[in-house]
Image 1 (cartoon, each protein chain N blue to C red):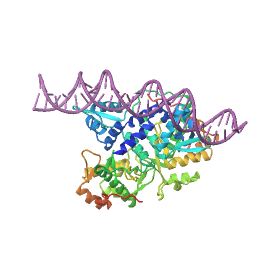
Image 2 (cartoon, chains in turn blue, green, yellow, brown; image 1 turned 30 degrees about the vertical axis):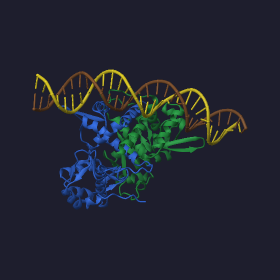
Image 3 (cartoon, each protein chain N blue to C red; image 1 turned 120 degrees about the horizontal axis):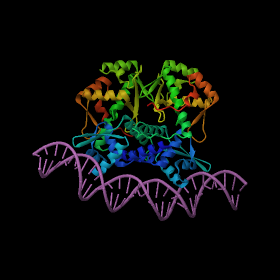
Image 4 (cartoon, rainbow over the protein chains, first blue to last red; image 1 turned 90 degrees about the vertical axis):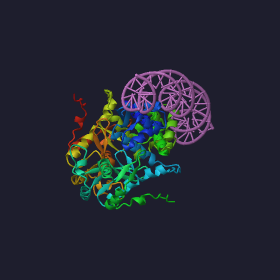
Length: 245
Length: 245
DNA sequence: CGAACGGTTCGGACGTGGCCGAAACATGAG
DNA sequence: CTCATGTTTCGGCCACGTCCGAACCGTTCG
């Protein structure tokens, strides 16, 4: 079966440390230039160029010329999904008592970051918990749905749930997807609902994307609105969670 | 960030052709011996032993001693999900006009096969289509739900939908998951619902697992019941689908 | 137009990792 | 016990692929 070879090829492409770092850097859904990606991958531009060519050739990245720059983005949500699922395997394997060091930059990432097209980190988990607790969303391991109460809730926020159904034939119910967080090990909202929420946060200035990393910062307005809308005290998410002994 | 290295490690493990073939062989959810896997990987037992040790060490495989044999199975559904998602990327990338050759064994696989814990192939797609058409299941890109009508339908089959919710707190709705088929390029049922259906087929002798491959064969009883239950003419699935010009 | 910058191509050095032959263990069978 | 089978360890060979230095294109400035 020739598909096994193709499988191995894709996995091997993701399996090189430099390329993995580049792919991870693109997980915020935006496009980066070849040089930026070279820096993220910790290699020289020549080396990165080769990697990027191979990744594009294989259909993992979508290149775009723009002036004398060349921008690369993840080619499709399927690629992002693949990386998510690999991270999932990484997350739930028995860790050999390795306490992963948390640098200051890592802390910001754990707090709130983008994950391709939705929000991840403690903030995203808190929002998800609030939605589940408020009976606006039902989540299972395999997926989730927006309840009637949830549809009204999102409508009050100015979002139109029915517009999120991606397929042509709209489902009567709005279906979303959980995404297991590698830092929190808890599910948060992904799929059409997660994407719509993330767009909303940014469009309404609840959060701002950070320049260099996937971390996002909550604005003052955002603090107010996360509290008012979901009952989330953003400042309370800052404190480091102690490992239960 | 140390997690990038772990990510690359996992992906690299899946990225070797021999290991990929072994992992694929385990995608039917059963356990195989080291020698069987060596054969599947196209390498000698010594080489396979090394691979299997690394895969187990990394938490991708779960080894079990049994007499003088050593059985390996996929360590978790997360691993199966990872492989599914890699296949997904393989499936939807622009193929360079490569018409993948379909051997006779491949044909049986396309017809019906197991995919870790559920059924895949034309039969699975047909069942999914029938359930959607009958308004028993609603499917979106992100997930799916069983409707009220569907709950009754499955109950008539002797299945208990409410028992499928994997998490402690049962959801009011039964939520399932679509799995994009690499051969059909259409979604079919996975998740708790897909698993339950697959178990049901086997327990009630609708299908039988093949000894050597992931393909399954539909029994005479199965032909009757797929027709009676879902309106599926199993024989009609045999004919090769012509590419629409 | 020429300098500067971003990106790519080429060539050669280097190292990691896959592979098998041979041999050692372990387990079960005769 | 002895032999056969399944699995693992060791050693050495080989090749692929990564990496960078240097040089080469293309674009955008001053």
